[in-house]
Length: 149
Image 1: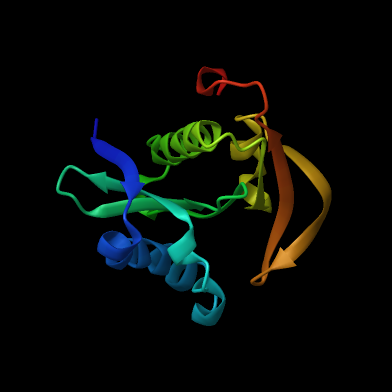
Image 2: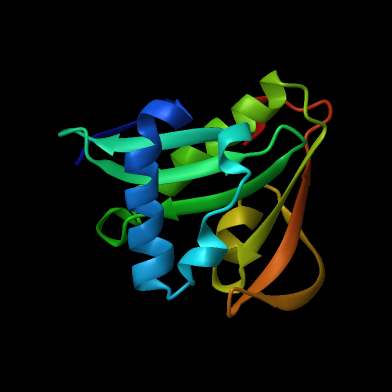
């Protein structure tokens, strides 16, 4: 079994690694235009970083202070190995610590089932974002502990 770690990233110190993961997944693999991937919000978000045993970045996600989750990405060769689930678990734990009552995300339509396993529910109709079908998903955190995920 391959080992990895997940921790809260420091945007200033870890941004190069976070950029590399997001560029590999969103820009090169999925064809998202670079101008849509990078925005002014990164510096104000909580970022998680997953690294393999050699400390190479393999996954990332971000959480806005008001509860929006986004930019969740795992390198292709690491998918199906629990990295995404660990990232999500850590994001939810961080949201609960910060007393965020509800988290919201725009899931790529094909990944809706992944988020549903954590209790997210789809709200509204499917829509296009960066040329990819998405669905808005919501999870109420009020009164929950991280052990429930």
